[in-house]
Image 1: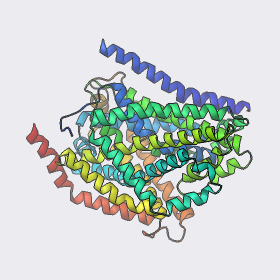
Image 2: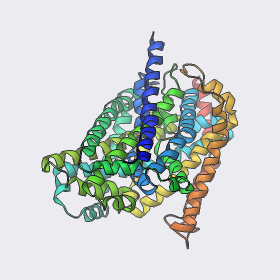
Image 3: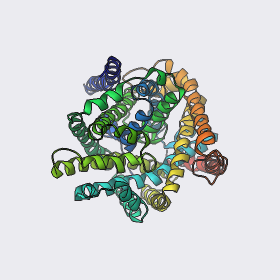
Image 4: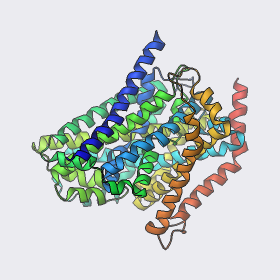
Length: 36
Length: 496
């Protein structure tokens, strides 16, 4: 795998999966706040 | 069947249900094919950008319209954009309903191949093309179409909580487990890394090609469920304190995460089990409307998997089980959309369901017996979805984008506040993308798909067939506009 592929993979997975994880964690935190 | 007003019991029940809408068969078979055709990594960059300027803004709009109006597509858009524009909501609803007619056939295909995989018959045949042709050329697809509609109808019959929410709480996590299992198996095959390298290698020349950008926008428009009216319909059942913006982002990111996972799985499998020739097959494929990959090419590869017949049967079965789950969770949302629209128009929910099922069963039959008819409907209503996205944006603009943002999106229950950037995207960027996409697909029809007969309404991939079918439906709904408004709003006034 060349450097371009590695950079694109890290960026794409970072934005999409990382974005999903970040939004999910934020939603979990907010939801816990609402329940309290 | 309960007539009382049901709401999703929790945020997570609603999110799983909405992800169930967005994640469909297109995430699994269309995404991989389009990535392969558009230069792998070069495609992924615009694909990520359009998630932010098409999918998430429209999903936010749908969530907010559904929750704030508590009405289906017709009543929702009429409340927001004005009663004169109820016909636009009817068009949005009809497009998703028309897709339901043939999507049920697709769900049936997945179930048929699941049964083939379980029985082991997928592994005993050498000619998967003939198997596919003989199946779709016969009358068996009708039986599986009926089965798919019956399953979908049963889920909707059980209601929002015991039907939609419970089904998605089971099927969506199961689908994720299946995809992760398949991905682990795929990336551990010898040679799999070549496929992953192809998927992520950017080609700068292709990145500058406008066609790659249009393909990425189209994938977002078709794949995320944005602009279909389906998320709007589920948002009707959102709790009062439910957030809009974070939930929309979760839906968009969740959908594209599944596409990426499926892409990694398919590229790894294809490069590991069919080195050299696999990528050509992935790009060109056989069979219609992207189905060649799922029903012809991948079944061939399952037979080459190491581990013997037991593992081959296991992996081919869970692949088609995953496809079936993805199809069913999307299909039930299409049935619910129609039921909700008919309910808003005054039908009791039970009657609305029976009407939807009857129409679905009858009008799905032509697609079940004729792939040409299926392809025509996929072409007409697939592009029709872009008009739907435009109509939703129009309703927001008519209402006042900033007012909509402040009151409907950033209203009660919001976890994060959406800034003024949203006004610019929904007012300018979304309509611009609608015009560009429709112009692009018509340009393709005129210059590539059907040069001689692009104007002919009876040709499968023509401009004429789109204009005729959209035109008939739009004129009908414009004529019915006053009737629909009277039924929806006078009825709700009486009720209050």
